[in-house]
Length: 239
Ligand SMILES: C[S@@+](CC[C@H](N)C(=O)[O-])C[C@H]1O[C@@H](n2cnc3c(N)ncnc32)[C@H](O)[C@@H]1O
Image (cartoon, rainbow, N blue to C red; front, side, top):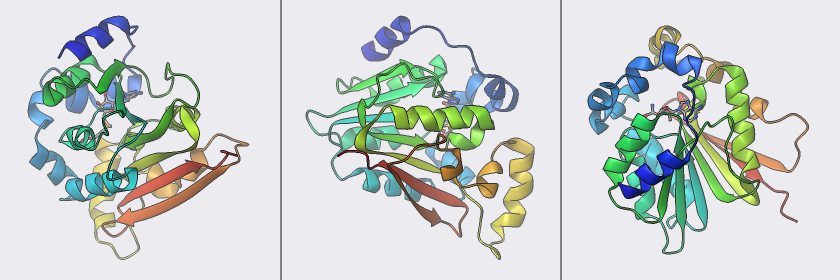
């Protein structure tokens, strides 16, 4: 708990982005949100039983042992961060940022005292961190919540703070395959509740990479008939 108190006090206060206030107040901003949603079974239900599978796919991609510096962009309900901490090597460090103090406080409670992990109030679209600071960056189900301009900045910032040779891993929604009945179910649900999410059905994450960048290798894996994706963007400019 000491960690979170120290970091939040030092970090400059952040304005809550309009999209969070407007569309996601019930899930993250409202004081009761954490009490309602911090349930692994509920997160799993929202992801049609795929939370564990997507979490483990991300963890396995990051490595059996997390080495060096890892950044998690935005808190997640459920045990993703605890599982990352379990994989941290002795000298490894995990840094988690979120724009809402209530979410960081919740994560601090879940983690307990954890000296290798730092939690910081920060905007994914404007990270207060040096270029090339992290070996790997995880962005788990954040992009679909953000409007286009913010989403592009989040992608750009995640890549900026990643070392040459490092990678950014995005786990998020994706366009389901033709014939997947989830297309019919999820299209109206997302349209109603998550107004920017269908952008991930229309476009590949690679279309939001900063213009004119080279030295990036993109690879994608999909899950649950294409409804979810894990896209890795590796910086290959490590010569
Ligand atoms: C990662 S997303 C959704 C994750 C997933 N649905 C879950 O199970 O929690 C939710 C988090 O993103 C954070 N967030 C949204 N916009 C952000 C931004 N611009 N910068 C940092 N964190 C942000 C929210 O405060 C919230 O804690």
